[in-house]
Length: 220
Image (cartoon, rainbow, N blue to C red; front, side, top):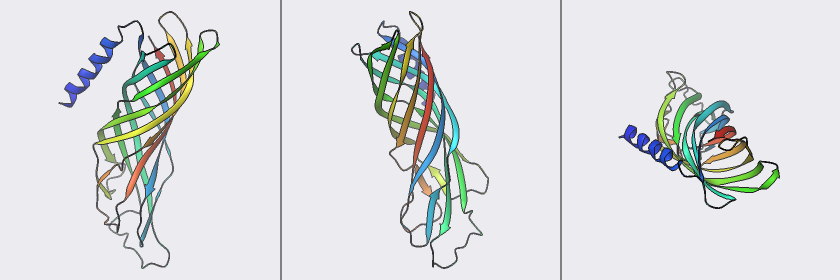
């Protein structure tokens, strides 16, 4: 069923690109993935453990609504990482770390379908325009695994996530049917990605993803 859905999406994007006011292209995005963590527990403290470099890529589709407003979507492969450190709160009994690791990290891969609006300025240089982008991006998890075999705090991740995205960049028309662009995008995850955890905290552990990317692409 998942394969059929992806095929339908690809065929839809391809058919829409045949309109004169539509552009289909490719995007390549070096990205920095990090986490935001929330937990209320009198015994333990959970903190995000830094950021990691990732690389996402995929198809994009821009459809002209007016000369300066475009509807933008696509199908993007987005890898992320969840990494955190568990420590004891001060003045609490010694925790038993023999069965669980205080540091854990997990790899997650998503297929993202952004739904956004691009706002273009007039030409700032010949064939060059600045644009701003705002929207949301539903995501379907296609893969997840711990980076080490003994990492078991998170038993299962949710199958869906959603982010809000903000960005801005520059677009250059390199030919009649070719457009190059570069932009910076900030994506802030809205959902708790954890479905089941095994530690047994006093309150629910919330982990949300954050992604900052530098996007390079070409449209035809």
